[in-house]
Length: 419
Length: 159
Image 1: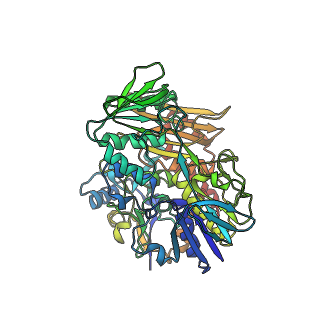
Image 2: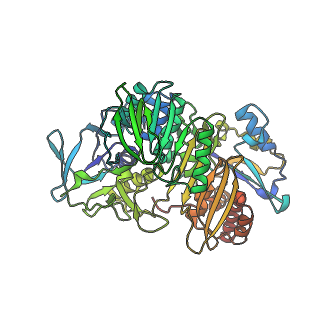
Image 3: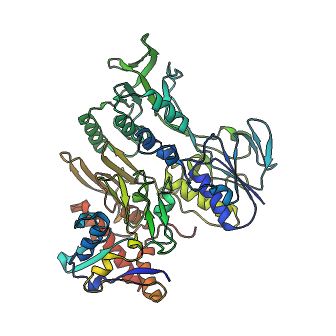
């Protein structure tokens, strides 16, 4: 049996390791598109902030880790897949066959269709190679513009401030981290950043970027004065890497569509991580949850199925946590509430504390938090178990900060019922 | 023989000796706010519940870590944080459905119970045996009951 895993991010690496641990003895090939040992993009901001060196971004640290597990790591980029014939073709020529294939090709940054986005000093922050460019290009005191204040933009924001640049953030949406925070929380994060010297423009489009003649760039903004930049970091979003699957027989939408066993429309071909549109635990529909826990769970479940141990995945829960210059924000599930549901909200702008719990009947379905660092994981526990909160819901409506007590009380009640 | 913490909330008097001992062992100061084990009070203090990591088999935290900063100690079975590798991304803190991995803003790292390397200070400090450290096999039944409390809230079946 030959197992081929395309993509050496967390989903691909965990899948290859899981296949190895299953002990079938088949050949396991892990195909990496980059000239680096398998690494974590999530760790790149900490590299930019000089908290860690490049080796600190590596997914695995032991010498000979992959060889020791019988995993053959190959540097190739896949140009096309023929799922009927069970073969891959590489960009550099050559091909290989597979019995079971995992697509874990992740995502690629996308840039808005405006003039100047191809200039050298407009960079993405996605790969280790990008990070090297930013380290070389962003010196203390430089004017740096961050386009996009989404999750990735905000992680990069922290690192750029650590590099002591003069930072301006430009975001088209009406708030920062719009996909993980409501207007109240997004505005509190923006106020926090501005009080620490970062200029934040929300509801602002960049019309174009041009060279200004003195070696720097000028960003023309929609309805606001132009901004000077020595470097522009573009973090305006990513898209799943599905282009090479055209004509492959694998169905794609916003990502590669997979069933509960992480298998695609093509038998024997699976998908995991940022490229996969897997089941969403909350909605039951398909969605790409481009987050580390989902990549990890996808990779493991896909490998178990590939290795012949049928394992259903109940779906991933959207969750995120972010540190924006010391302000910790967290989101879970259906944080913007559900129709007919209730909301428990506690706001303390002075201390930058915010907690919003969303319920359907007496079940927690979503949460937003600013400044919550202790026992935050119980929110996941309550959402994913769909634990009925009973009387604790009223207690949480009065004071959402009692979430840990509610968790313990409901977990204990469940155990008493079981006894 | 691996051992595990066995917690009996009915015996807990909320004296906080466990929190003091834990914080002193890990942080060098008596600071319950920095303890890996926490006492939660219910019914206005009539009932107290010591709560910490069960070193669960699923190890959500370990699998969610992007840089291999969480590893299982083969001797104790504890999942431990390697401070020198942890980048402080906090993904483990949201991935653990039991809420037992916490972020320490002062150090920029996460903290969790590590069973003190096999000699847990909380159990030694507990004056009422509400927290004991016992052979996992001997207490198989009790431990299963304890774990039932936890695994009842397990978010993902199978896998």
